[in-house]
Length: 118
Image (cartoon, rainbow, N blue to C red; front, top):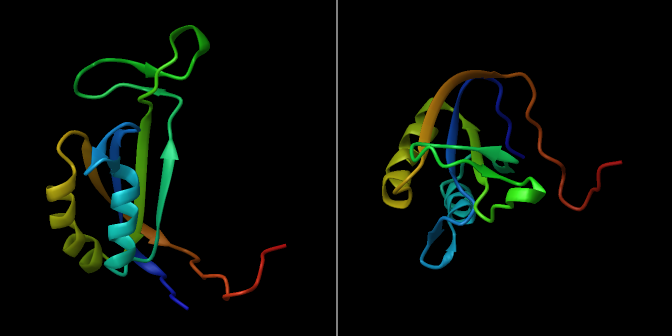
């Protein structure tokens, strides 16, 4: 079971939902590579509206439905492990925003295999 507490680094990657890497969703590729790299965890969050460097607004509102909504991939681990993962992103992310923030992990405890949360 992996444990992580104390000072950590949060890596956030903002990309588009339709961004791909070898015909697969880019956000999925980032998550899988983070897992292969042994990082503590990664989550993908889908935005309902946003804009980036292009200033084009992407929204989920019915009147202007967009198929390319903003997506944020968030990874938290030790500074050393997160920084070691950055070259992977250089290869994968052509357009988007990659940010690093210092953070403090208060609690990170994995679920035991085979047990369901109640």
